[in-house]
Image (cartoon, rainbow, N blue to C red; front, side, top):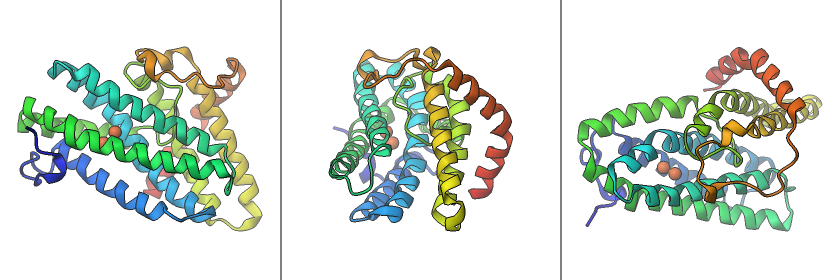
Length: 269
Ligand SMILES: [Fe+2]
Ligand SMILES: [Fe+2]
């Protein structure tokens, strides 16, 4: 029998550097944010959701690119175990993408939000109760610490928004990381501005945020971003024709804005 990560001390999990300690810490933060989300509407809800995206998407991206390949290597049933959580991650990406198109107060929005918190809860339980204890039994304390440092580095530079079209596995998600991370982090800065800026400039900021969202959706559609994915996590709903012009525009935007976006995101913490 395995002991859930939730029921182990920092030392049992491999010490402060261990990937299991870092995972547990983020899961506790997510729990608190989901509690805050309950009963919110309008700008208050938008602010909490922004914090949830900023926590969840880089966290999951780093799992998919650093941890699940190790799970597949060291566990005989690692393929099945990781596919299950990749499907949960894919559903989270698709739900958030749907949420972005739903008006505040629309009846569908409450359902999508309810399902989103349910899948996030399931994902945490699957990882803490099943996946991570199995990983812990297969790798050394030292390896858990090395994985912790690697996972943290990737988490800090990963995309921060939903990208359901991109593969949940390397190499597709790794290739997608740089352009999407720059566009996402720039959009985070703009969206935080929407919540705090004077009313006179919020329409312009909304416009800028939508343009950045369209640019990142266009980048997602490059065929290489889907390489390596399992067919069961493939996003097909409502796929538009391939927008080459938008991709060219997005690439130029990344080139022009990259340095400034990273600086701004660092300043914003
Ligand atoms: Fe996790
Ligand atoms: Fe996860």
